[in-house]
Length: 134
Image (cartoon, rainbow, N blue to C red):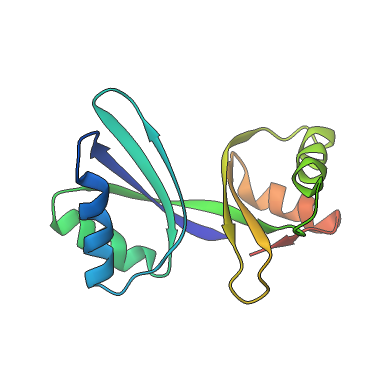
C-alpha cells in the first residue's frame, strides 16, 4: 500500500511549478502523478518519496492537501498487461475510482497506482491472482 498526496490547487499559470519547487527544496522525488482540472481548481495526485514531509511543506505554503492510501500494482511492460489487470478487476467485481502510471525504479517495471474502495480486500484478491503490490 502506498500513500498518495492529493493537492487542491487553483487552475492558473505557475501553480504546478510552485508545487514542484516546494518539493524540490525538500528533496522530495515525484514518483508518479496525475492532474485533474476544472475551470477554477484542480486536484494534483502524486506518489512521492516522502508523503508526510511533502504534505507538511505544501500546507505551510498555503496548499490544501490530503494523504490517501492507494495500491501500487506492478505489471510487466508488455502489450496487453494493463488489460489483463483490468480484466482481473472486472472478473472480481471490483470498481476502480481512478488510476495512473508510475514505475518501479528497482525493477524498471510499470506500476499502476489505483484507488479502490476496500484496498485491503483488493490487495489480497490481486495477490491471489499473481499480481505484485507495493
